[in-house]
Length: 126
Image (cartoon, rainbow, N blue to C red; front, side):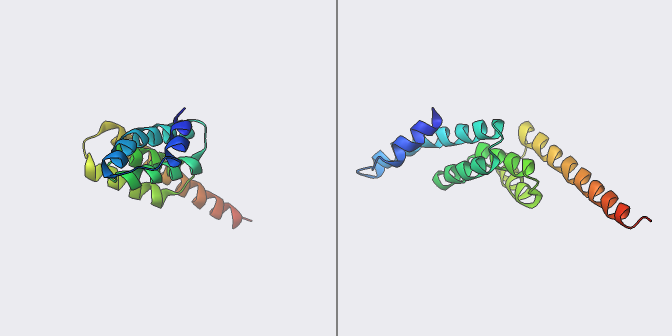
């Protein structure tokens, strides 16, 4: 459903700025919701790209930063996830969902580092 909206609007050309704004007002929530659906389907790269498109329309959409951070976290791209969470927190510092995602990211980074250290140590044990 959201993908159909995106495709339809990608092939529709606005006659003026007012019409473009109306199209963007429809496309923006469709892109963000599509990104969320893609995460649920484990299509993380697609979700990152979809949220990038949403942020090109409006770079103050917290939900797009949150969604992109979640996708990056799921792909173990921690630095990129950190950047997205930081952007989201700058806009809405008290948002509980963003704070929860930040905590999940920090925990995953910590576990990843611990596992990497254990594996490295195991390689040198005789």
